[in-house]
Image 1: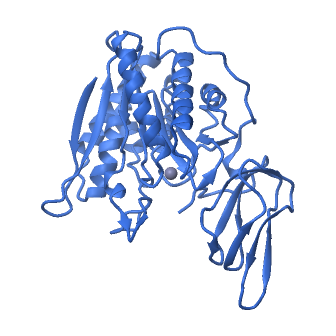
Image 2: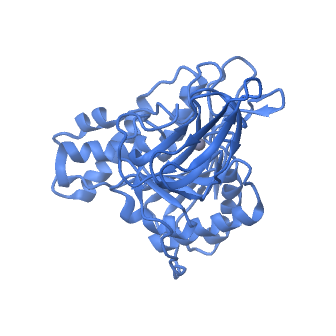
Image 3: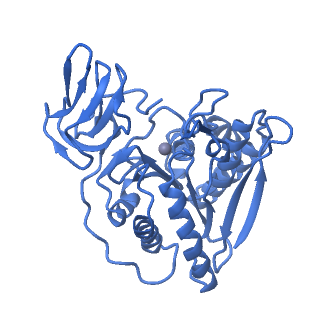
Length: 371
Ligand SMILES: [Zn+2]
């Protein structure tokens, strides 16, 4: 295992931070690469504990000569956000200076890489895929960051851009385990959903935010739209939501670590027989079918539904209570589905999203993510 340190731009003198990456070597050269990071939203810590367990196990597997791919692990993807503790409250989702979400606005390489490889493609899909990886690396090397936030994003994107699989470990506020990926990747990701016991698998090609997972999968998608089958989709990404923010425990993390390693064995990245593949808990559904359940009024938020509940259309999800006027506002969902996540806050503001329900029929379009 090799430990590399990547310096970020210091916003001011004496405040330097680094990204630490851990590189586990395969038993054969040129075997491909898998990238796993945790806590890009720095207030989402279950993945960091999973990464720590993975770090121990990957070290053992490397020593046993069982790795069939290079595996790169970044347990703390957002040191800038991790330090945001404001009056005893950890933050870490948005950069304070710009207000930007740490998991948005990664560099879109589609155009620049497409222009660079035009005329260089052959009939060999493997050659073409390697060409894309080389030009992605070169394009990112040419990017010059001017802020700490840009240098953090660029460091992570450089580390992951040439991987064939990217796993980005997040969590929701209060939630059952779920994941986000693309419809094109789903046939390869389904086994991960099974091993993890994910209750929802939400699919979108472009959810509009240039998030970390999509800054890779979208490039390949856009290039394939431009150049056709000579360029197979040679990389896929998954945002894994490891339940809720408070679900940091050894039993959960050990189970999630095992699920990821079982998946990597099933995929062929770890040598040896793969574990029995459990059944899929729920079929994958479109991200555009997710209903953000919102309250029209502010007030005390009292939930009637918990994550993991299947709710029919019109189910009472919560009451929002104004103790001054005695007004009690019931909040119902519009479409049936699995309530997979809900807010941790108990004082709602008017217009706030209080829960998410994974429906079956797509009905939204355009930007599909939270801010
Ligand atoms: Zn997140």
